[in-house]
Structures are given as structure tokens and as C-alpha cells.
Length: 386
Image 1: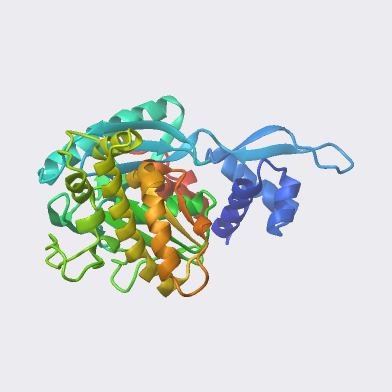
Image 2 (image 1 turned 90 degrees about the horizontal axis):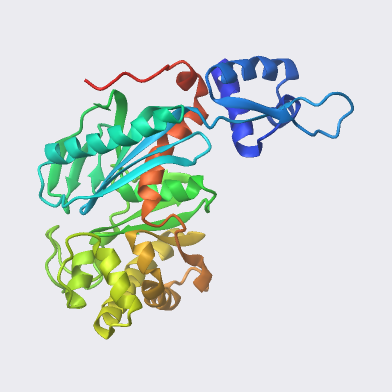
């Protein structure tokens, strides 16, 4: 019961803070005495801090305002992309306090070499965060592929060349879990105040999607929901690496768009290359992006007709191509969605852009702390690596 009440008080501070103990009692339905006792524990655990007097409008001396601490427990987010590695540390307020991104050609590269380089990047941002008074207490890895949430195994990440890969249970002495990058992008949108019912598309080398229904991630029976990239848009289309034909990735995946645009793959940031050439008005690039947007809209119309979301969000690296992808997407959705008249404003570009999956990975630990603050308050400093 006390752990639940700790979560209630911390949740009230997170949602409404800064606020006084009296306001926290009113928000949670707990007595002021109970809240005062719980606040002592939250203060000792480094989860909240006291600010100056909180204006209350009540007679008598005002109490000190409580706010989430900018120091103390934090979340470590990690990401392996086909063309990059990234790491960041997020504090309890959801603010990124340390971040690093490194170009890396990971397609076909041995997983142990990728993870070793990622560990070095993680060590760098973790050291920076500790210098700010933060102590990461958990790490989550975003992967562009199918992840078994129960075991943490990367079942298949075709664009990396990984299959049946069991990840280590810890990294830098922190508990490590893995999650599909599209799922994490959708959760980041949700936790930053997005719609409770949304289809979130995350695209770069591959194309994934995540469904948020009633504020919860929909995983499907085996945890693999959201493989939008392998929805067929033309059943008689070209062969796909997955073994099927005419999949969306053959028309809107990064390599397909580059080929249609007549561009050679860049050594890094291929989406950035497409965006730069599109902004320069190159006709073949614009035509390739128009075709990709049309294919994306065709595939998404089935999902929208099936689940009737409040919004569709284009995220991941493709958020940077929204200006050229959205017209075709909107046209297809308008012509194919039957469950209601489709309004163009329901399709938007994520404000988080390509940082969404990485931010979502770091926020997994923050949400866990908010749901169970007792475990974080009692965890103490993490063990050092090795």
C-alpha cells in the first residue's frame, strides 16, 4: 500500500507540480499527514525537491512547493540504427540531459561489435549525466526489428542482419531491456502528451508502425504487431527480403526511394541526402518521394479503416521528409478511409522527429520510476561496468 501511495504522490507532482503538500493531498485523496510522510521518503530518494513557498490562496503560512528533481534517478536510452548509434540520459522531468549520436554502418556488421561500440557511447553519456548529479538506474535499447518482449531476444532485424540474438541482461551495470524502435517512438509521443489512440509510423531503412489504443501499446498475440513495412501494396510487385512480394518497403523504404530518385547511397544520413535534394527541387527526387508517400498512404488506409485512430503520426527519420511525403499520404487516406470522412489534419509529423525512439527508450525507465518510486529510491548508485 505504501508503494502505491508513493506512486500516487509522485504522479501528482509529475502531473501538476510544482505543488504544495496540501495540494498533493487534495489531488490524491490522502491525508496531509500521510502525504508529508511520503514526501520525506521521496525527498530522501532524490525523486522530488522542495522549491520556495507555494501560493495557495489559503489563510496561514504557505508550504514549500514540490517538484520533480533535476538530479537523482534517470533513464538511459540506447538506439541501434542501420546507419547510426545513439544514447541519451533523461531526468525525471523527461528532459534530455546528455546525448550522443554516432554515424555507424551497422548493416551486416557483427552484433557483438555493434554492441561494444554502443557501450562506449553509453559510457560517455552516462559519465556526463553523473557529472550533473544524475544516476541512471535502467537502460532500454531501441532496435529496428522484431523483439520478444518476454525474453528480450531480437527475433529478427533484417536490415541489420540480426536474428535470434540474445542481448546481455545488463549494460554498464544497469538492467538492459530491448524494444522495437517504432513502439518506443509511439510511446514517446504518448508520454509527451499525444493522443490516446494513434497509429505511429517510424521509417528509415525499414518501415515499422505502432498502435496505441486507449493509451496502451497494442502488441498483438505474440508481441509483433506493427510490421507495416511488410504490408503488401502491390501483390504482384518486386520480391522483398522477407520472402513476400510487393511489400511497402519496396516502394517507400530508404533504399527503394534512393533508387527511384537515381541517387547512390550516401556513406551516412541518407534521409538527410534525400531531404537536401528535395529541398533543391530535383524532379526525380520529388517524384520518388511522391511515389513513397502514395505507397505509405495506401498501406496506412487499411490500418486506419481497421482501428479508427484519433491520429496518424509520421515519425522516425522520415519526419524530416514530411513536406514531400504527406501530400501523397493524405490523398490516399482521403480516398480510401471509409470509417469517417478523413480530415487531412489527422495526419501529422512528429515533433520529436528521428529522436523519438531514443527518447522513448530513455523514458521507459522514467515511467517505471513514476509507477514504482520505491524501487528507484532504494536502488542506490548503479554498479560500475566490469
